[in-house]
Amino acid sequence: MKKSIYWIPFSIYSLVLMRLLLSPSYELSSFLVEQDDKLLHSIAFAVLIFLYLLAITHFFCKSELKPQLLLVGFFILSMTGGILEILQKFVPGRKTSISDFWFNNLGLATGLLLFLALKHLLKLFKKH
Image 1 (cartoon, rainbow, N blue to C red):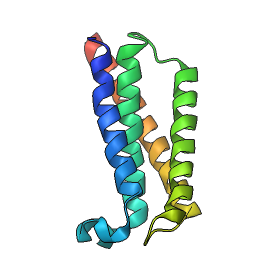
Image 2 (tube, rainbow, N blue to C red):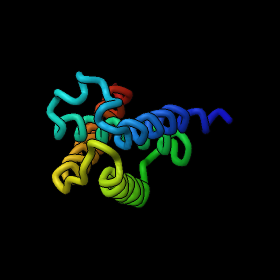
Image 3 (cartoon, rainbow, N blue to C red):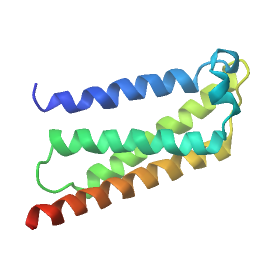
């Protein structure tokens, strides 16, 4: 139970993100609609993978993050983003966009690198 608590933020954020991405445009806040769509996609998916990595770090491996978990997680989240993009074709006021898919992946890569950099910095501070 103690370890599984780290999955709660990831799960809640995933559900909220899916709801936002599959909502008709008229249901979204005017703030979200008026913003740069690509930037929002990148930020949203950077946060998504960051929460995923935080969860697997505490759930599976206390010491080192296995590269397989990084790759599998990136692949699953990337494919999820792709599927959500395809599903947007069937949502009123939304459309499928390959550029949104690429910006989702840019966000995933950014979040992954940011997580690894912070993990490395924390390790350095613990040594001193």
